[in-house]
Image (cartoon, rainbow, N blue to C red):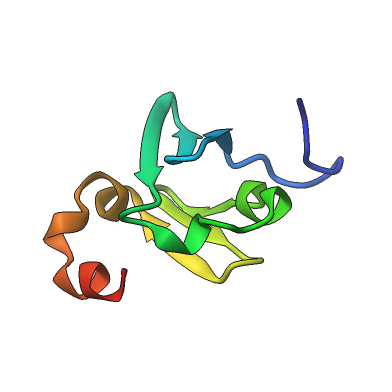
Length: 88
């Protein structure tokens, strides 16, 4: 499935699955799970807003419809970011 318009840059990032527990971000041959418990901003959002994700730079993801910025490190190790965790 190619959801990008012709001529747009394909950043090799996509949402692989959306479930009642969270979402899976597929990027550069790895799959990152983001549970709603840790990333509550995605819960109850429309699918089009969740799948509209851009890789702004390597390992830095942005959801423009939701104004959410995350990195590989935040997704893989949210416990390392106490300010981030407090806001969740």
